[in-house]
Structure formats: C-alpha cells, structure tokens
Image (cartoon, rainbow, N blue to C red; front, side, top):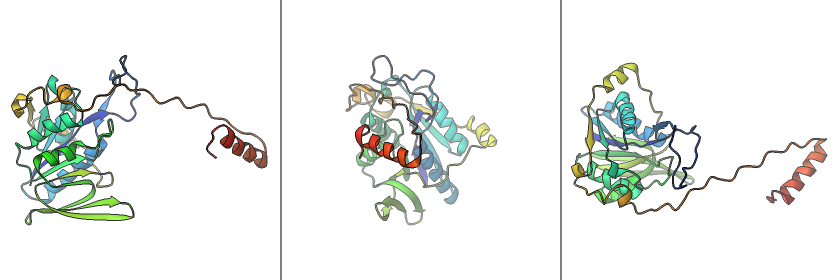
Length: 264
C-alpha cells in the first residue's frame, strides 16, 4: 500500500490567542505550534496499515512556511517514510479551497492507494479540504471515520462512521480518501531511535511551479473566502456566590436566572 497522510501545523490549544492590529488574523508572535490533533489519528492509521500490510510506505505532506518542517520531522519520527513540504510564499494565507488545489496537485503525482486527512483542523474548523481533494481527484471519499479496515488483496476498504443513533458501515474500492475522527485509534509517541532516524529521512520541498500551478491558483491569490475581520468573544462576567440557607439561595438563584440571565 502506498499511503499519504496530509497534516497541518496549528496553534497549540494552550496558546493565548490575540488579534493582530488589522484584526484580520491572530497575532502569531510567540505562539507554539503542534500537529493538528485530528491529523494525528490519520498518521496513526497510516502507520498501522503499514505495519499490517507488508511493503507499504507512508508519505506525510504539509503546506506551511519554514516551521512546517517541524510537523514533518514529527511524522517521520513516528514512522513515516517520506515527507513532502509545500513551501513557498505564494502558498501563504490561502483558504481551504486554495489549500486543496495545491494538495490535489501534489497527491496526483504520487499514485497513492490510501489518502488520509483529519476530519478538520482545529484552527479554522472548515473540514472541507479532504472533500475538495477527493472531488477533484475523482476518488471515493468517506468522512469522519472512526474505524478503518483495509483488504489489500481485494483492493477495498471498510470504514465505520458514527451517525445519529448508530454506526454507518461503508465499503469502497481503493484508491480512496478518508478523513479521520477522534476515537479511531490512540496516536503513538515518537521514540528516541525514531527521532534520530527522522533526521536522516528525506523531505522533498515543492513550489507551485513544481506542481504545475501558477501563483494565482494558490495561497491568497487563489482563495475563494475573504475574511472581513475577527473579533474576540465578549468577556464573561465574574461569577457570584449566593450565601444563606438552601431555601433562600435556591429562590435567589431562580430569580437571577429568570430576571438577569433570562434563561428561564
């Protein structure tokens, strides 16, 4: 199996988020970045398939600036064999559409049997990139997968996905694209030998020209979604402590919920 897994570098969940001066993006000064948590399930799924199917290989792909090499080194340390870094100023500030354009061009060159994404990135939460890529590559796609079984001899896969009140089981031929959900597996940690080996594994850097794309098709120039502005949510009012006997405090709580909070 020739497997690709697309990963994104996102701000760590414990980062303190502030807006930039123009209020059209967050202030990225001093923010630490991690592998998108949903993409971690995709990486682990790819590595498990590699372990189950002899002769398989895994390629990690990301589109990012200089710091993108960090997420790729993490994937290589976990056990991925190859890495592709879509790196060029022209890729910057694109939406999900422009990102999918670049990833489609990169993935179409790899003859992959299985392509994995996280179901969404936790920074923009769009959840559209994998679906765009599947449509443009003309491949079957199963979203929000929490279990995946591969039949390499039959060239097919069986995917389970949670739906309201049950589980939907989808069988598809390969090649196919899957977006991965929490609960699919338990992502592994990198070992020291894995980290050392990752330093020797190749990372291929590709630009729009390498992908046969013009700079007008990717990044900010290729975006279809324009963000007018961001604003922070309103600060929560300070809490109140009600004192007194239970009957009095319950009566006061009900009054406050009705008259001030207006939730009753």
